[in-house]
Amino acid sequence: MLDTVHVSVALGVLVAAGCGRFGFDTPIDPTGDGGILPCTKVCECNVDDDCTVPHQVCDIQGSSRTCECAAGYVDTGTACTWVGVVDDPGFQDPSAWTLTGGAIDPARSEGGMVDFGAAGLMGFARVQQTITMPRLSRSELLVVEISTRGAQGGDWPSVKVGTHWYDVAGMTTWTVARRCLGAAQYAPESSRGKGVAMPLEIMPTFAAMTLYIDRVEIRPALVGECVAPGPVLNGNAEADAGWSFRTGFSNGPDSTFAGFVAGQGANGSRAARIFVERRCDIAEVTVKLALPGLDELPSPALSFYNRTTAGGAVELLMPLQSMVPGTGMPTTVVQCLQPFQRGEPIALKGFLSPGGACASAVNYESIFDDIAIINEPKCGTDAIADPGFESRYLPIGVQFEATASTATIVTGAGQVHGGAAALKLAATRPCYGPSYEMYVDVPATSAVGGPALSFFYKATPVNNYSFTADTATITQDNTWRSGVICFDPLLAGRSQHVLFQLTGGGSCLQTIPEESVMLDDLALTNDPSCPK
Image 1 (cartoon, helix red, strand yellow):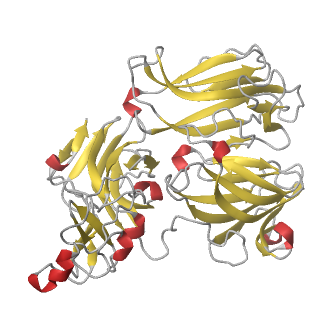
Image 2: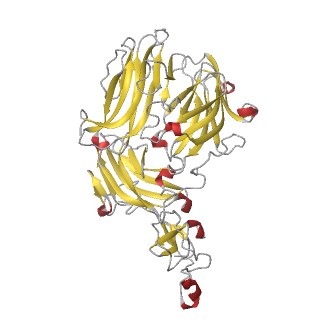
Image 3: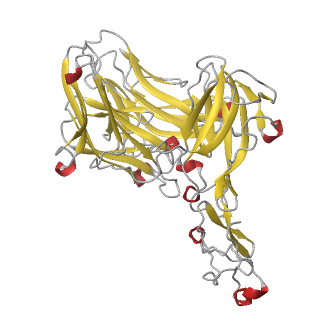
């Protein structure tokens, strides 16, 4: 404990007031819930901000309130210094971890390892423990650092801190990867005390994998490595910080542009512009974002000003790839962020990369301005963002070819299953089927059945295109039907990729009568047809 003022006979007047330091002589219940005892012993603080040493918290212990180092930090006499929150980060003590399959070998030693000891996981085996994370406001920007090796190049680890999973690119040699933690991986700002317990879990990304983990730690981020949760840095493009650009070309350096331009943003302000003259060129703009926690932003959405050439489309990557169709007119795009993105650091990448004959001219441009993260109640707080498409916003994860297929929100009679809206995927040329992809957290098995995603669909009969939805059995007869996608019960709690797609073949330049599918009313559930 730093700078503690101990109650003594010499401070009798303060004892009489029930306080250990001037200025804190009135017992306060910061939450108003009556769950805190009046302070009658050592009373150094009422709230965290009363503690002046960085990384201290106001720790309520019965009838005392003292300034203590937050979880992950230790008192070194003059400061709170980070020591970490992972018990046995190097896998030398198997008792520190809980294994579901796999094994820990404390003596394992290979060239490229950080130190002795490693966990070996095969299939959907997991290694996990409970860690106590501090609040970000009393901590600093942190990263999770993991050293892994796969038996094959595609053997990737999936890591969970708190409520969210993320995948790490795997290598056949020992590789150390770092990833910034988001607000969802810290203790909620509404919590009290040193920190909040949450799970740390690691498992292979896919079933047919063998994964070795040498070390996993949570460390302070390097300067400039991570973005603090909150408003988008320079989202209005009036300054340079926070934005980056890239171009690539097959038709000469003058065929692309990516950078800031004056007078083309909202209300004639400065904006970011990307431009490609011909197919196979590429122009990109990237803005790093970090969402606040769900206790601050329960229904997050992305909002930005955009103007994209009519007949074209700008592609977005966050990390799901999606597209925004171009109309040539300025518009404010709003997209509901999927649950796996809530409270997470993400990068919004807008890019133009039209395919086709590389010599053909397209002259596509896209203007970006006023990028913001907003709270949009229409997106909801469910396990699936906007599951019935009632917000009327085109969801993140839709893809199409601008001249051959579309993804739209429809509201007409017969085009919706429930409510007033649905997502329509349609194609008018072979080879360019549209799709909608998402990630969902797999529910646990119940007495009803195994984990599943249910949905309703209405697909035109098979001609050039078939509608596919992962493992679901599909009937295409232009009537509303229910579909079920089953998940492996060993994936319970983990994010799982889902893809709805129109797939077809034929002459790619041929024009065909529209073939389509309408999607509506998605829900995570348990189904008796799915394995337990």
